[in-house]
Image (cartoon, rainbow, N blue to C red; front, top):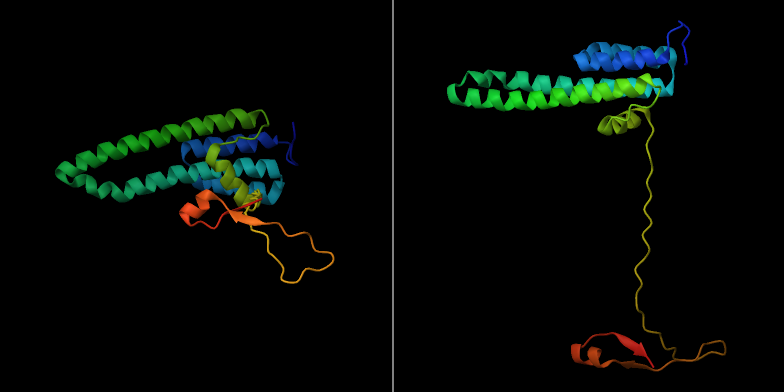
Length: 179
């Protein structure tokens, strides 16, 4: 178990970040993230705290959107429909935040990476760890008819006779086969 200069295990900070994110304290998670970045300078701890911070931001954004839409709840029929709809959405997102926070706490307590699906990629990008994926595309093979030289030279390869195929003659295609 790794400890800091204060004698506190590093996993405590990561667990605390996920607990604060689960409770919806975005500001406290942001302060804890700043403390971890400035004081500890540990990559693993910073990544875990960033994941908890992004989890709390998602929770906070959903709450802000609901607060913006809440004046519409006073409209007689539309208000009851909107409040029911957004109540369901808020419940689902709160349950997801709770599940992700519990997953993060369980893994971080064992000194493993939290690996929260979308939030890990956000934390990697924010931390500057970007994976470069290179795709290799082979050039398409093209059938090219041999070029006949007007004046043969000594080192030139023998010229082959090229005749159109029956299908090419019928379709007025430019495909040729070598005889």
